Length: 155
Length: 291
Ligand code: FES
Ligand code: FES
Image (cartoon, rainbow over all chains, first blue to last red; front, top):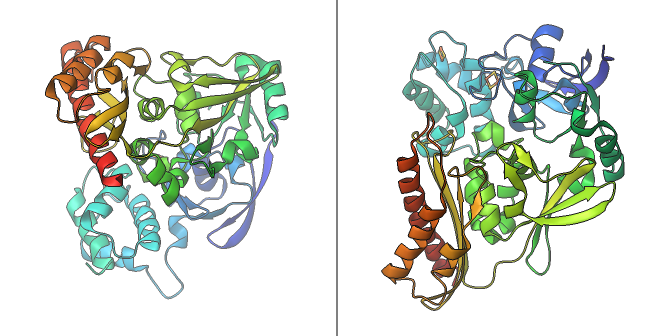
């Protein structure tokens, strides 16, 4: 029925154009259109944070953003976190602290934690817990995740 | 998700023309944290979704020289609490903005959306009422202003007519020696829907309360301004326990909650009294700290 919309964005530093339906979320565009399946769909309604990405530097739930809303935006996904030289310190510390089990929540936690550390490189435990309150994990328990983030922050 | 057309108006005139033409089949989109979920789950339907974030008036955040504040209906919470001067000017509203959802929700969610969704438990609404906020509404027939306490008319319903759109929220400057606070009761530490809530602002002259405004949420079909609760405090000392109890009793008497999975009538009436008392104490503390 509806006409596809052409959207120009920058994703993980790469200029990226895509076509989407008006009713497609950014999460669907990433996963189904661009084959970037690192961002996960947990709840598809804004509760779990598995779909977390950065949009112009702000942490958002990509299941609650329309692809069409991303015109001109810079998006960072989990695929853009590691560098050429290796894992991001958050990724490394999540491994060292065994801060994951099934791993479904992990991309969301890492993207969300990166958003926090970009803004506040030395957060307190309290700040980390509140910042990550919108990310749910059903297996690991939160302590290891919090410890991994605090370790990166040098706390 | 259901099919719709995505429009990106850049002026109020364009937006209200579509809202008039399409009636309730056109929905303004700001942060999308309610609307996208509702469209996906079939709880609302739309043929047209109007992304209003490119309309300058809806994305503004202005602190005027006289201390009054204008917040665009689509301005996200993080931008509001990220502005130190505005955060200091509106302490009760800042409580609300920092506890709506988690960080990612606050990156998108707007006060206009919270108002238009018109949930009885909307976290920004009692504090907006306590801060004397006024809704600025544009329509094909002209502009009008409605106090926030008259904006929500029933759960999920508001006073907007066909062809009307919420543009911004105006908040007057708080007088000297004023403070405000918003508190809600939820069973968890964070990220939940209020079982009962209260927004309070007070103005002091020494130890005497010269003005007070009390609003409650999640205990009636819409958030409520309780004039008698505020009036019970005026002219009384901040330590006057009789006045405080009269204020709390007035709020509890006005509460008309329902029993649902989050709480019973009895629990909610009790809790709303506790929330009013604590929010009042916090508002007074902040008024004193401001000097
Ligand atoms: S999938 Fe987006 S918040 Fe759960
Ligand atoms: S590791 Fe399985 S949900 Fe977090």
